[in-house]
Length: 173
Image (cartoon, rainbow, N blue to C red; front, side, top):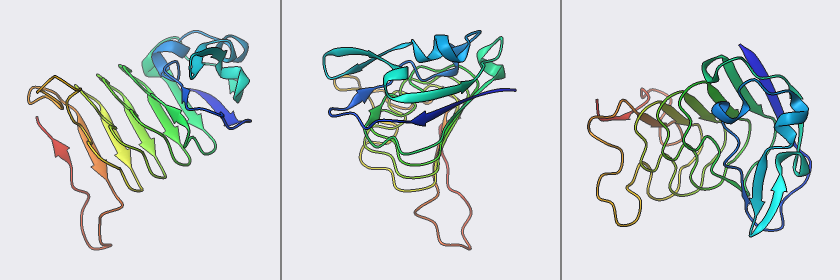
């Protein structure tokens, strides 16, 4: 597995839309190319390199690419959005829409996540060690489906457990 490490260097003034932080977007890219991937801070076009120090190189496929975010991403939305394979680990907190519309792969957040994590999720695994705010695995506004019954997706929240309890899963297999 090829590992790409993102280390936050600057806190966004507005929320950073990090929709490029997925193994699918990183495939076959060097650290310089990954740093040049697009993002938005509000309506301003920025790059990932404006907010993260990037090291490592991605794999030849999304399944061979692991992304490690070494720091807090409380103001970064859409991490792992629409990913199909590979893994993303955030060593800290993350903002809204983590794993939204994801179809495969694994996301592990060691801290807390904001609302709408796993929105419209169709597959993969989303693990949150801390607290998850409102609307986990929900439908997008105006859509009634949410985490689909025919999906293979799993959302787990470890924060609500007592030490003797096993990890509950929201799985609609």
